[in-house]
Image 1: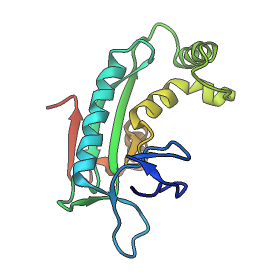
Image 2: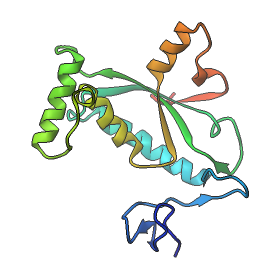
Image 3: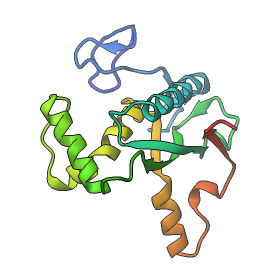
Length: 178
């Protein structure tokens, strides 16, 4: 039985008995404060993420669909057993273009508010609520997953006339599967 990485309380399996957080197995390297995860754990988390992409794309409770997901960073550029995180660039698009994007986001927020699936959000958060909801579901509270907005990254690279950081080293398209 271990200790919770968040509050230090005892664990029941991988669940903290005090705060209820899921604690994934990890490796610590001496002198390195950033948590490292086993590659086998990263593989499981990555597989679960791909499953959640399929669920989002087939669930009408989400207004966006994932069109492409790209894995890059230390996981793909190293053979080390210890992984810092899973860097995943996500490309998205609206499932419907019949209503403008902000209105769709606000409608989705209002429906989730009525169904008590979300709490208070200011107008800016409501205007991007669909992306927030999708990101939370994809991440699934995993500290291992680091999501990147691929469209924004590519737009910034284009404006700066520089290569997009996602594609500067090795990468792998994980959705749709090649």
